[in-house]
Length: 403
Ligand SMILES: O=C(O)[C@@H](O)[C@@H](O)[C@H](O)[C@H](O)CO
Ligand SMILES: [Mg+2]
Image 1 (tube, rainbow, N blue to C red):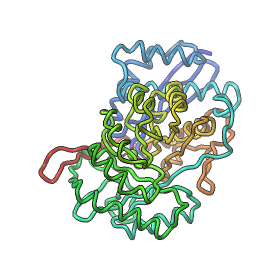
Image 2: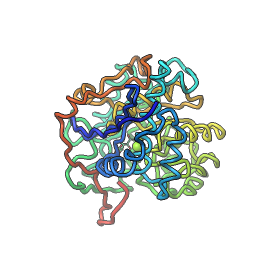
Image 3: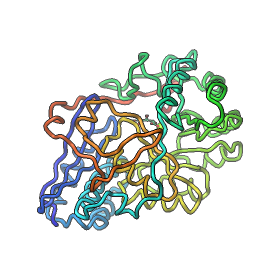
Image 4: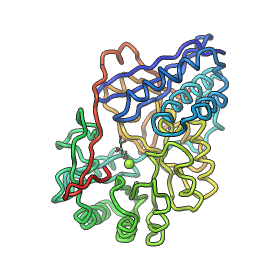
């Protein structure tokens, strides 16, 4: 079965999403997510200029060989743009192979390891009270796990909180980067109060997660983790920038609060020491940014040797294609932890019809052959690309900081 054509579809039904469609000479096609928030057209250029021309005529069944061709053959290896482009090809080829086998993708990976996939939702609010109301709404919907983020008094904009009450949170919210201000001292003093309030109102069984979003130094992260141990968090995410993998040794010396990291990782080399030294508890690198199923399952297998579980990134800037494929992976992977789920807006769900379903705090991937997600190209064409950038962050004194 040969690859006859491949094309990139860019659409913006509320936010930019990039999809690669690969069509074979037997009429089967597969699609892959190629969305890199704020850098979408860089991936489009990489795919159209350097990948697609080299795919035409290749055997669509040779997923591994094509992966190695695109990775080892690139010379300039790794990086978010390269690995997102490779991921898009990989997801599309796994979609085709599962369709050719007439089975849902999880079957091709090795079958079910669980009946359903536990997800966590996002409860955010401008203050603790409004965040608690959002937690209540999620509990009502059946979520067993909720990520909590709230505004911090004295800091004008905080990660994860929508600009206006009731609005969806979308970080890529301006043509060029918006400038945010950050104050670590205010944050460290205030955020434990949020967890205390959630435990007070919702008890001990609800899984609470929190995303620090790269903003602390390792010792500050150790201090935060220790100060919130009594609240028994499911995880503290991205508590410090993880290029410095050894920084996590310092954090581990001070706290048993579980640590999650890796949504910005794009290869096994970004997390090898973190996993082998058991410096983290959950690895978040997901299919669209870490080279697709072929590479992420190698990360998951390494993680399994060291009691590290998966906790895939699942924000709305990852398309339903990534979500669908991730749910099949989550259904199979033995060392599954949890799956992030931010519901896409209706327009996006219309452009990307899908088989996955939410029920009582869990997802099932569906039984459709492949990853179960499609794209309505006519509808997609109605939403033209519009540049949108992620913010930058500065400390109060103007120092450029981690967003
Ligand atoms: O854990 C998360 O979902 C966040 O870190 C994301 O919202 C992240 O900020 C965006 O995906 C960046 O595009
Ligand atoms: Mg995050």
